[in-house]
Length: 96
Image 1: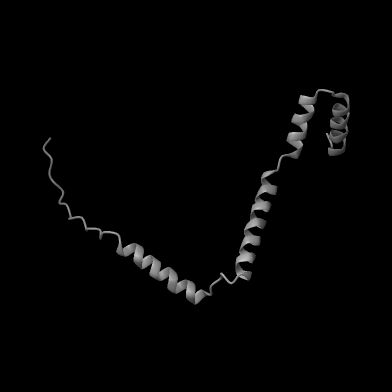
Image 2: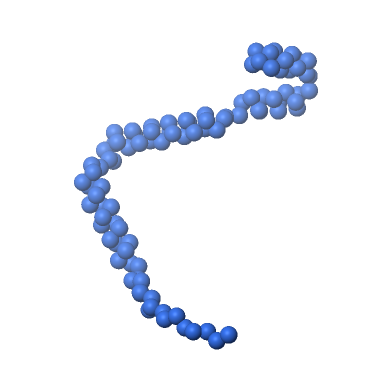
């Protein structure tokens, strides 16, 4: 069935229906945001927030990022206990 024929059939069925519950369900289904639309909307929100924070002067250049991230990683690793190397094991002969 082509898209045009499908639209025509749906319009005809909607015109014939007077049940408010059915019409509300159809409206809900047709109004639902698709996954693609949701992904685009969220991506646009992230871009807008990023642009706002750059305009507010909250950005940093690569050198500043490198130094801050290196310090943070060193701080995290300093708080962790050092791993001990496991002793080598000799294979043991098993009695059958």
